[in-house]
Amino acid sequence: MQTAWGEIAVHDAHVHFFSHSFFAALRGQRPASGESVESMVQSLGWEVPPSEPRDLAAKWIGELDRHGVGRCALIASIPGDEASAVAAIQAYPQRFWGYFLLDPTKPQAGERAVQAFDNGLQGVCLFPAMQGFSAQDERLAPVYHAAAQRPGTVVFVHCGVLSVGVRKKLGLPSKFDMSRSNPLDLHRVALEYPQVNFVVPHFGAGYFREALMLADLCPNVYLDTSSSNSWTKYLTPAPSLEDVFRQALNVLGPDRLLFGSDSSFFPRGWNRAVFDAQAQALQALGAAAEAADKVFGGNLSRLLNR
Image (cartoon, rainbow, N blue to C red):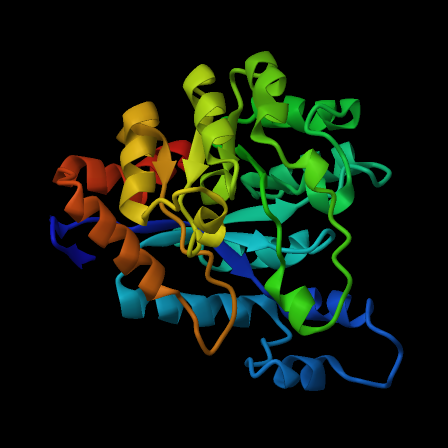
């Protein structure tokens, strides 16, 4: 992509793959009304995704090409939808990395994670507040062990404020447990599994100080920069995006920040505004081209390229 630093390879660490199966699962959580998946999605003002994940993957390829994005990590964003992400990466192995959302409170979660990794997915996404577990839960030991045995994989752990926009729009309950959201819950785990690379998205989503503390103590912890980062409203005074990047760079340096857009649905497609805002913040800080190249793609490629 052509930027203020010249041509750099942009790889996105955070793109939700809202497949037809994803919406079908949400439809199953709504009161029975005879509503179809298609009518439900259309009520959001969004495009209905193709029934075949490969076709949705092709649509994302068009978006990446339109914006000059090289690769992205596609997140199968509901437990049990691993097959959609697998289909996407099999169709376009040079353009996508695949992540999957795992609920470790369910039976055979460890076996499910191993199978997903063996099918080519490279990131397991944990949402402790969503399913009500601790990152230190012993049920996660097989998952961490599996990641430790497979270079080129990451464990993505959502911390901080959790608000799932599509659930709000559909009137679905979001009974999340914020007491499970502190990044410091990962400290012992990250030390116990030094071979595993952990990713905390959204700069900790409100737990910015704690995320910085965790990353400072654990060199295998990365922060993803995704979304509008509206969590800054919880801090006094509210930092600017430039302030956030300055402090993150001071603590982690440029080698452990992963650009993410948090893109998800069509017709919006790839959220260019997020990239532009983050690029502007780094430019204002006087970041060198080498640092920008790492943050906007080099670090992610280094983590996931086997």
